[in-house]
Length: 287
Image 1: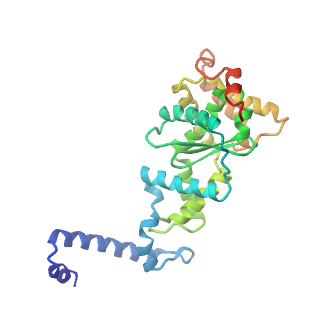
Image 2: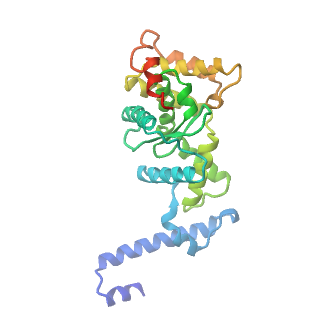
């Protein structure tokens, strides 16, 4: 039937073969879903075809797809009010300046990065896939100098570089029964991404890896590595025994500090930029 139609409209045979290959691939995908799909994530073949371009293959997501998905997650975080962005051009420019300096020397400098300030006095920071980093206004105020703030931003870039959110998204989709043979529906992917950004379910290995990536990043960007230790130790002491939300993830902050001390050469810990407390307080005075 298809061959007759192609002949009728005088379409070259090469295009006919390409069509047959594509049509066969779609049929195979549909048959796999019909045979293997669980009731919890069953989907009609018409819906599958309609949403074909909206399906995300988490296991082998491309760089462009990750960036686009991160953009959608960011838009949902903002529009839903879960990330209320703080508008202060001077502070925004300063955070972007620090962030882009770190992005250039990060383990994933090949993607665009966006740095935003959350209008929240809590001491917190988080990141989503595709280069989106969020820093609370309260954390900026809590830092004593630029090196301390850079250590936090570098840590969040480390999570992006290690693609932690992508792995967590895959795990979450499997647990919720949303992952089919065709992949993960884009709308579900965005919703999971928002949930992950808010809950920040990073475990021991993720946090330690982000710490190592962040330390390496800030060192390459010529920030004094002692900034990462100063920030963690100061927050623990100021907390009166309670751990700030930014540090309340597994592993214990004391373990993270111990490991970082082993990685930092005490002779060069204070070499680099960002240790001028007075200059930093001046830069964030409009906060």
